[in-house]
Length: 307
Image (cartoon, rainbow, N blue to C red; front, side, top):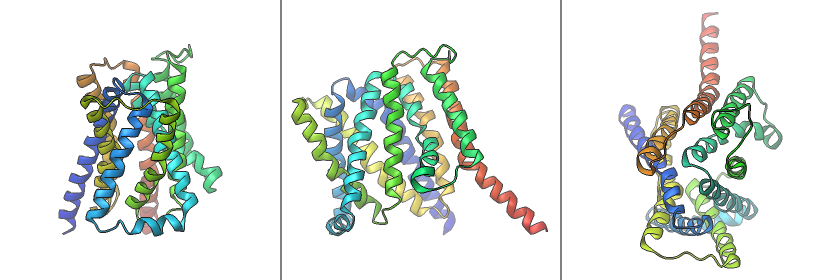
């Protein structure tokens, strides 16, 4: 039974990873006809509809009111961070940068998370975390300077700054989420319900309402469905079905590699050697951060059993 459930979990996980791998390309295609705030509005609206439909099918819509009233301030914070600040900044970064650069820089959020957890969650920073951060941000410099790190010359310093700022907002969102013990899909929907009026208000102030062309609408709906909504549910199903989360968690390393392939074939971007080198450093840092503590713990158990 465990073997069958693990196979099912891997299928769910692969489905989520493949869909996530397409969204960097979808961002650029959507931003060709939409401003960042327009894309965020359409995508957020789609995500709200998708998550509402899912919870309705599961008979969980009744949880929304009670879960919000228990921690209203928490959901006001999460809604401000995700979708509003995180995606607005991320989409602007994708608007300014080649997709390969924005994608690679965005993956450093997992390196930043343990660093922020020290002051905000009073956790300890390990030597592995420090080494991983050094390796990852070395990769960032290589990507940002297009392979000439000593020059410290950036084609789009604003775009690079926004891409890195988006990782800060994403980390803050997950740190705040550690205080949330409610249903995760309900929590995500509450965040989007809070965030959507903020997005609408910015569009109203800017007078930047979407042009409802079929192409623009389809691009925004795709982003909302496969970046913000259905894929999150698919990934949760993978984690719940697996006997151990490690059986599916390592699948996330496939996503940036597949993304680069989609970016090259669909967008036609020539992938720079600096992107390959920088992304390899970032992924190596992520693997070091995830796998090293597990190997140390496993080795420690063996040592204890031999004594």
